[in-house]
Image (tube, rainbow, N blue to C red; front, side, top):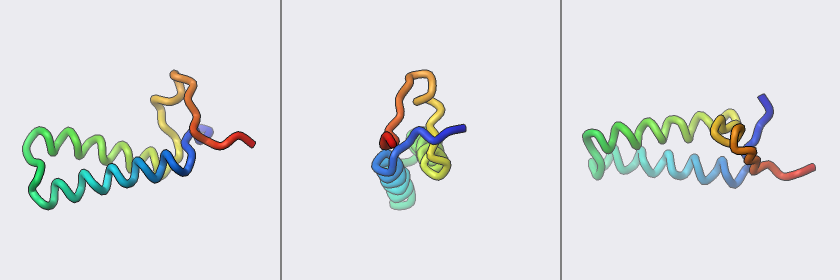
Length: 67
């Protein structure tokens, strides 16, 4: 499994995941919306940590810098 995410992509995903977490803990989002966004936040955080997005693979996208 070769990484296909660059550092900017990873930072943006982590920021979005943290923002969703803050919105949940402050009570701004709740119910079904919180559940759906929470799942997205977990996916964003995990894909950032492993530097691989499965959705990028079939689309042929890579945000890594070329060497």
